[in-house]
Image (cartoon, rainbow, N blue to C red; front, side, top):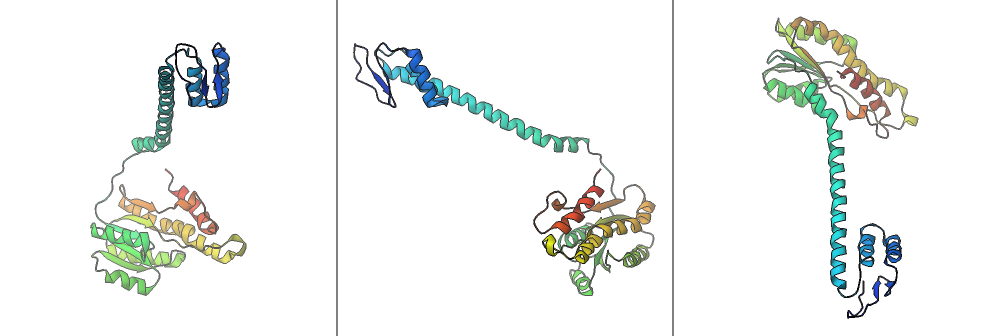
Length: 271
């Protein structure tokens, strides 16, 4: 932006290559400036072009810049307000769910049956529940995994050899847990056991897909059905906890089988 020498006589002012000559129509030049620049910058130059320039060019420019700053701040304020509104709307469903969620009593002691306790979430859950005072029965498929659980030295944590995809093995686990509790209530089961066989669908053997479903979905149904009589005997406060996965909502490449099992598992957990 270049200003000509100021004096008593009207002067020619050039705005980024566009001249405003003495006597020229300010309204026409203002429209030209607005079309040329657009937005806040155009507003500055339009304001300056519509200001009578006879002596104090600097004051006119400062006034136009101040107005433009105010307009830009106003626009940013509306943008910030919109962002806050979007954030509030996004959080609203979760907030409503928390406000309307029902509370349930739980037992502070008793037996808990945890599947897939050899590693990961199942192992951590079994250990922490046992340390919290529950009598935990954690399923593993190999004797070596059972020995590893015993080696932790956690009181009240008992490994149980069981393949949740084997109905007979689940029945044996029910009998073993019932005998071990000896009248003590079973207060919860935790359906955690799961496997994954990630391959592109084109080369995914159907046998492996069925195996994933047998463990991740049908295993959950089988364990829940066979342990339900013990939970009903316990009465109010008994719980069924089923571990789902984000894969039940969003599928990654190569996880068609695993994600396929987690969709129905997530529906089991819907209140």
